[in-house]
Amino acid sequence: MKFLYILILLLVVFSSCDSKYVFEDYKTINHEGWDRDSAIVFNMPVRNIDHSYKMYVNVRNMGNYSKRNLWLYVNIIYPDGRLLSDTVDFYLADEFGIWEGKGIGDLYDNQFFYKKNILFPVIGEYSVSLRQIMKKKNLRGILDVGIQLESEKLNVRD
Image (cartoon, rainbow, N blue to C red):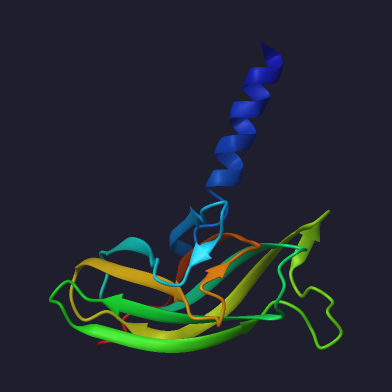
């Protein structure tokens, strides 16, 4: 019983430590691979438009991923329907094939800085979609993708 109390206390302490991220979510990729036509969509609520934000894209890959990089389309759809589109190229390995991310065994976690000073003009739910645009239609070796939104500055609209 004492172990249960300690476990609950640790969960409460660690869950409240990293409050710089106002949104964080991961999606698991189909075990058969990430199809080029399949977008991974995150529904992200924005409640404070007086802040600017930084956004990160997180990628978890296996050591058997056959490429060194990952090209993505990033689309942000605003609550009013506006669309912001971008193309990014993230490097998961260096020129010698050494994985860049933090890893345990054959699993590597990567956090890629996407954009800073992002301003969201309206309160509401934004949709962020990631779609792989590599030459292979079905991309194997990517396990999970995620996004993180970090509050950057206060009162940017004053």
